[in-house]
Image 1 (cartoon, helix red, strand yellow):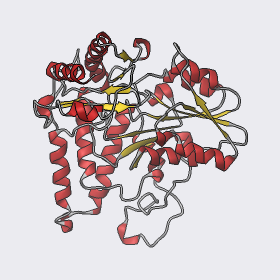
Image 2 (image 1 turned 180 degrees about the vertical axis):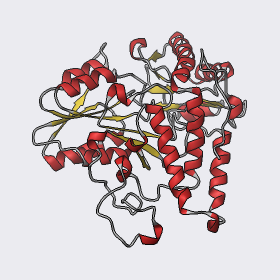
Image 3 (image 1 turned 90 degrees about the vertical axis):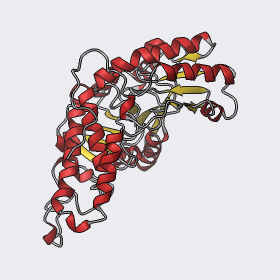
Length: 390
């Protein structure tokens, strides 16, 4: 049974505050969804109920181990306008990106385009890939007064093999125009690999529109899911590749447990060949299913519309204090970076936490990432704490 946090949502305008669906005390202003979201109370209950099944393993049949992964695949596919066959269940963004790197050939002298200070999960696999193939890393810096999009588009050319970028920079939420990046990549025959861990679930995304070769996003951030779970989209043209581990469940006929000794040379259809081993986790999958079920009721479009004015208010308030928010033209609707001109000083995150305010410090940036559980009192508490500590 799938537990819903709410039964319906009319889909119009903005979403009313949903704090009652989470276990957040009034004394806590949690503004770190870009690091890890709190679980919905309903998702927590679903995960606990799933974990409890392991206490009575005789009650579990092989059909349940098949049913929940397929339900989860279907929900992720609906979120990004894909097909369930296009979705692999993996434990992390790094696993998904390593899968992409293992299945793309860079070629001698050809390059992989990355952003400066990109999240490490989308850097290390490409370092290994260019060493393997004799390729090059092209690291893009954001020009003063310019945008990431302009810099990436300038870097893509005939010698580009892969463009491996996020939708929003993890440090300050600066946006990339993925449609433009995808078009330029296709023009030069470069593969497009996306890490959308910092946006999927809070901002609309369609594989029909962008058409990446691979896309991965972790569940624990904007999709409000558990840890050690991520979703890998593999374009149909890439689904004949080789997985980075060889388990039994992703092989053809693996649902027939009585005959697993009839070893198969072929795989389950579509992207399932890239699934991680032990994908049928009785605790994480029910929690993730519940969270995605709720997310699809709200819709990423409505979430973005709801969060955008909150983020704008935070940016305006920070500017009056002398902080420098992410420029409006590149600002994400769901998070904002506030640069501290003289640096945030030691232990700023801990000092703000003493006021009940939880944000992330990334370099010289205070990253503020609200969600539907945040209300005006949280924003007031944020600025009271910033005034006290800066």
